[in-house]
Image 1 (cartoon, rainbow, N blue to C red):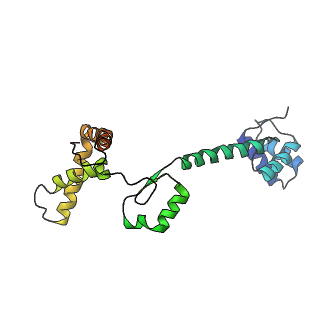
Image 2: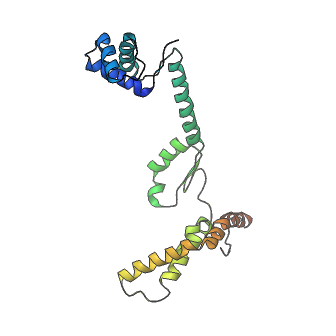
Image 3: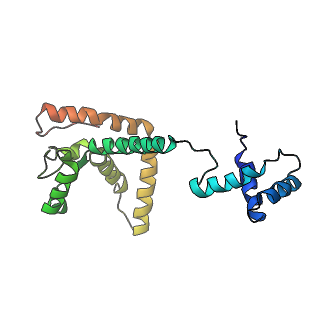
Length: 201
């Protein structure tokens, strides 16, 4: 069974082989002088290590199945990514640029029946702004906090926004309540078949 060396040892073996200009016997002597407390590889290890690195780019011994294994790993990884992409959806709002024929054609080609938007296979959901925390909670709450009194300058406005966002972030219970209400809002929208509904967050 061939001797196996550590990566550090193989690196030193290769370095010494190069230092000795590819002379394996001289490399054995040089290696023994530099590393007296290590086992000394025979001359074939020096030349084989160099060939292994030059041809395969690795110290690790290769066998006939390594290329097959590598190809299979790559294929499995590619299939996982493809599977993820084939099962993902995208959603666009009613923005005019999203409705352009060129955009819709691209979405039809790349997302088939898995995109939501105006003119798409799945229409933009009714009342969708009422379903997202940014729309039903964040902007209204932030606006109320920031404009509770008259804003006197741009700096005052920036500071109020910063303070209000920080205050909202620290209110974990309210954030949790808002997040948990998304499902209830979706169910309420379904119950009224997309018609107008009102809820508190």
